[in-house]
Length: 307
Image (cartoon, rainbow, N blue to C red; front, side, top):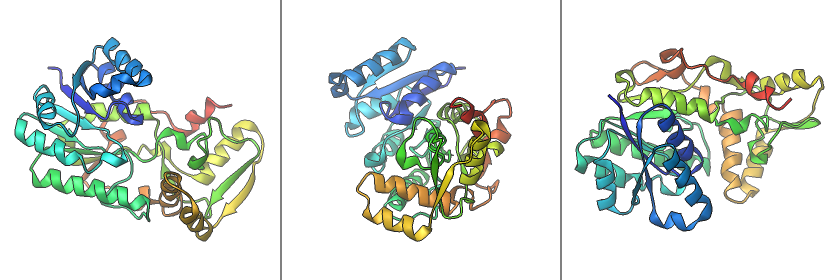
């Protein structure tokens, strides 16, 4: 039987990939779209591409309770991919799920670090605090859930960890290394994140658990990434080491939203936030162990496309 999935936050970075992945993996997919979005040519084109994939478009928003409840009544699973400004607005989704009474699983907007086990500083910490608040609200409402903890998105790879630069291809001359470069991060392609998420949406083993997407080949330090890249291009990059103190100073001096991104570098590459704990079966499961059939792209393979 096909699982019916509603995605909220569909025009955002990861939201659109989730919608496409849900349709591709054969789920009956619904996308919640604000009617005002259609006046934006880029968003209108995106919505049309969803329709072309067979996705059902439902009109409404997080702040229109009636439209939200109506949309949720169509489905078994709700996936939220709303951005940072709307994280706390997910309380409206929780209320609507309680009112509709038919949802078998809610996946709130996570897709990053584990909000309950983070060693972040501001301004990055605030996002994780809000995500943790949403977790507690879900649990208090007794709504069945899966929290998806993905590590970093693929754009960490072409920048070799300098994600504030948003490079399209890795540097061939010099690179900044944060702290000693040995902090272990976890980096997954967006497509693999969605593949694992779609496997988990109706899997009883992920019910009321955290799904950690921590495939072994994607647990890498900045030094690991740089060495892989140097091996592929046959050249040693000039390395500038940025101390933790220097990074903290630059976070304070950087304007939003880039201060958040710099904070993410500190959290992930200096504090090893993503790998600073072990996954306890009482609260979590690891995706590549649950779904060995998913052929994920390793960081090494990801770098091949840039050579």
